[in-house]
Length: 110
Length: 133
Ligand SMILES: Nc1ncnc2c1ncn2[C@@H]1O[C@H](COP(=O)(O)OP(=O)(O)OP(=O)(O)O)[C@@H](O)[C@H]1O
Ligand SMILES: [Mg+2]
Image (cartoon, rainbow over all chains, first blue to last red):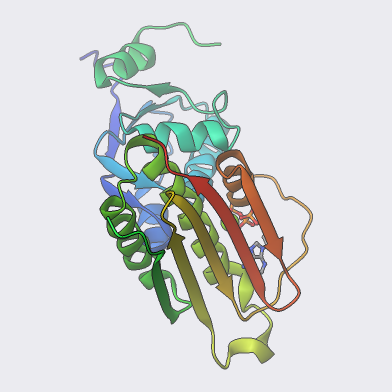
């Protein structure tokens, strides 16, 4: 991996739901140095709107410090939740970690 | 499968730590009635949003804390029609949409073809689904 542009990986697994709100919130802390973040959500089995709110907050905070964020989502329920909520264009979602990594390390971002 | 309607009724304190168990019980019940795949996911997602709303909004008025409960009722009839209700004894809170919130009802509306929200006595969401093969 390119040393000049390390990627921080944050992983959440299982059910991202209202009962885990505090834990989700404290896990989704943006590093303050502008490091790109790969949010590995591949092991999430279910997500609700509380998770969406925390993800939105995280992405907004990251954007303020110019820190790109890529989400890895493989669960159909989670992917559809984002569609139903009308957030398909808000998050950068990838099915494979390699694609997310490529986006974070290679692409000239808009 | 029985020709009689089959009913699941659940009631528990309106606390966030119970929401997952209610949802899991609903999933088991629906699986046993041959709900599966995307439809099972979607029904579960809609139920999860309705349950979360009870915990987050129904009992915010201090006076209504006495018996803060969540109710869930799922009825599957012989034709495979599911009537799903999530209800509470609180008070519906009218609110203007705020940025970064307000996804729950939007998600529910995207999923439930037939939805009614009765706020005359607490809040009662009723959703109807026809089981897909
Ligand atoms: N059971 C309920 N009791 C009282 N008010 C409710 C109930 N369900 C929904 N509401 C009201 O409807 C509003 C919209 O609900 P909705 O689920 O769409 O958004 P939210 O819960 O505020 O945010 P999000 O779902 O994104 O976490 C709530 O903010 C609340 O004011
Ligand atoms: Mg909600």
